[in-house]
Length: 551
Image (cartoon, rainbow, N blue to C red; front, side, top):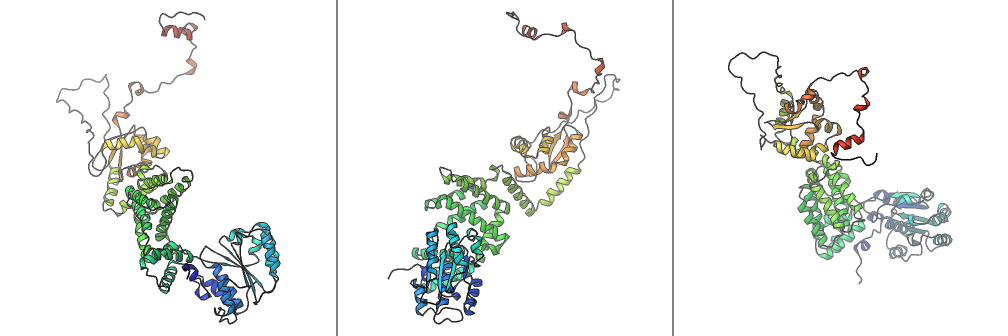
């Protein structure tokens, strides 16, 4: 006997056998029982959700010799012929391959002919593929068909169906099956077919089905033939674990394993995006994920470790990588570069990467026992009195000081320490990072204000930053939070600032120390012609011994 695929062998034959479409089966069953069947229906929904099966069940119920409460008996001659596809009362048309106007004209011409049964049912699959001319040829007959004719139109894309056709039908939307319903159906099929499949394999098959009963049964067929779970799906989880742990090597090893198993890089990227989407939904909207509770718990743990900003950034980055793969000579390289950027946010200067780094710092600070101490340290830095101003220079006209003990020399500023106290970076580390990256990443206002300063030292609680004068320092205090946030993102820990007036940078040069001289424009006089040197004179003075050949 020829083997028959599971999705064909276990195609629903009654309304009660439809899974996850109770709103459709209940309505159609009541319509048949009460003899209130419409002349045209439109079944829309994702693939493998039971659209064509429901149309065949409806045709069986309408022509069944012994219907039972709106259900076909499945034993009479009409039911057997419909199930076998040999009934003259049911005509199926694939609009994807018969989408021309001639096919519709032929259908319309045969619609008025009688059949052995009470009803003639036309099932037009993928009706959205009909051309505009073919759709228009069907309109009149669809609106007022012969009394014994019923149309059932099926489509996966109802938006492409002409509104004039949709308005002439009763529209039923089929839904994807929930993960629990699909897993239960798979266990029943496996038990009825005598297949030895482990529970974890059933759960994996249900996830691969993505709500489609046909896809899930095809995957179950494959797993049963292989004798167990196909391990090629494991590296996807390994890649996501690498993203959670910020381990680029682990993610790249997962890509290598999946590629070695024959997986296309583009499809692998789609699988990772789908996994990240389920990870995102596991915490935001678990009901939309459609996954078992144990799977939701595992994905929820990944979502907490990865963080919402990192998850969104990963989906966006991999989506952009999918677009770039269209023109990439090696799509695998494009995927690997995207994964490295995701695992190393410090290597990515995009705004999304900076937001992710800040979010990680906030989470670390919120869960750290040192967070209150850091906050108190920041308050202490802001309340600390400014250093005493430098002594005023003595005038040359003052009398000589009275004899006495020599004054103590002024205390020298302590030299920068190689390693800062506490958990703060050293002055050298701050200076290098400031010039290479941090300053360029500041907002425009903060960058303009802080560009004229420098790091003086790092004391026990803060990094001391010197500015030219007090007015400038007060202006910098208004955007101090932006600078501290940028430093925290750079070093991975809070770096409080203490702003001071820098004695070295604030001391003006001698010629600039004097007050501005007011110039009276009325007193200005034109220079005498003799005092004005011509360009030739300048050249002759610059090149001694030169002679004018021609003026």
